[in-house]
Length: 165
Image (cartoon, rainbow, N blue to C red; front, side, top):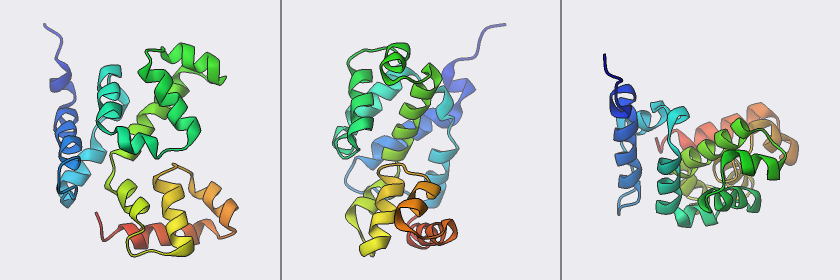
């Protein structure tokens, strides 16, 4: 019995890459089903080459990340292995791979651009959305920085993103 190909094992993955490519075209909006397909894809099994391609295609978005995340991506793009980056960062190899996958998922999301544009948001709400969707901070970290409860943070995020999905 032959081994199944990547496309057979992960059917959402190739479709999701098409969706990511579509985001970079003129109309970045996706309908609800396409958006759901993107997030149900198995990003655990994304290859290094696919990560590199995504970072290359979304280079402008990469530049909007904070310095630590950009440095991680630059080391990866320079051909450093997960292990070499992990040694430099003082982290586990799997942690580095997971961080890179999370960054790809975050910068590929429509909410990344929405948070940057500040569309229909102002002041503290815009700051909360930017911290969550651009910098990837957790609800707990945002609550600690803003002095709001985690419930209030979740409520703001839900209010400002539910109509865009």
